[in-house]
Length: 121
Image (cartoon, rainbow, N blue to C red; front, side, top):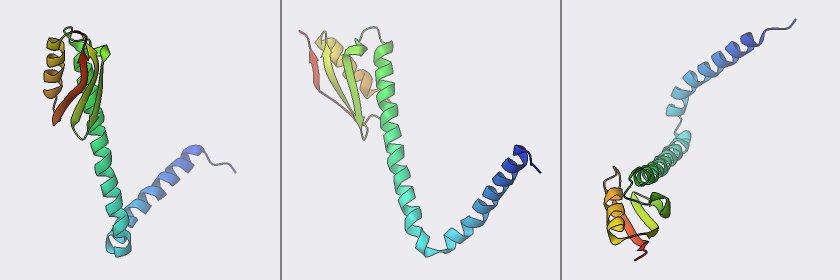
């Protein structure tokens, strides 16, 4: 006799939910599992850092592209631990200064490094 897939899915989800509910107290009471939990927390912190750097890079790049005073396509943006590194070639010193200022205004930016951002002049 065949059982419908819906019955299988409901049974599987119920078993999974019960397993998670029952596993929480066991994991908390078992000191041997603590290093595993700590390692998972440390990994999450590093993942949050990466997401933040990625978000900053995207925000800086989109700000450059939206500003008609900047040649955003010609400016490469990289972020590491909140420090934004700009590189490429822009038309003028004023455009270079504007790019540095705009990047510095983005939330989460700790510093802007623009040694590799050159002017065509």
